[in-house]
Length: 170
Image 1: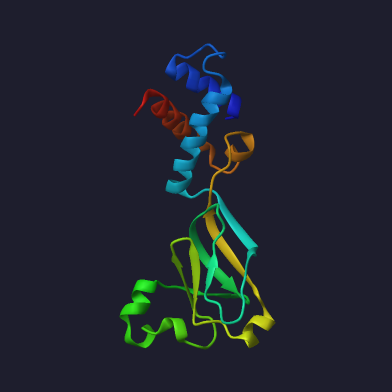
Image 2: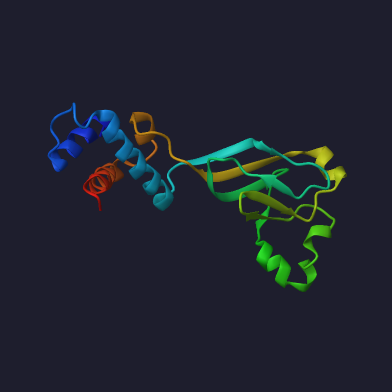
């Protein structure tokens, strides 16, 4: 379905046949909200970002991109880092002092809006490769044919139903 066809179905379901009130821009706001929720549930929009984070020697914490909802994996020097958790690092005896550990990068964790690397990357490793590749669930775009091409056609009616429910106050 195209965006125009989806708007037509939305208008049929809501019995809002007048295109002046609500305008298509208003209808698109409801579809955009539905897209955001659908994206969080079925994860159709992801981003591979190779330039968002440049690691520095002796630095463990880095800001993640603002459009990132969930980090799926971190790749450094063609090697996937293991996903960890700061909570687990604090509980294990061998990683309790995780902020002061030295050695090659092994794990990452997400803490708030920060990507945390463990152990702290030494300057020798950083000089070899200072870029990290992140794959993450990213924020959905605005409603339109470009965004619709990213989701399966079988989910288009789900999107219409969700937008109708939002309009009706459910």
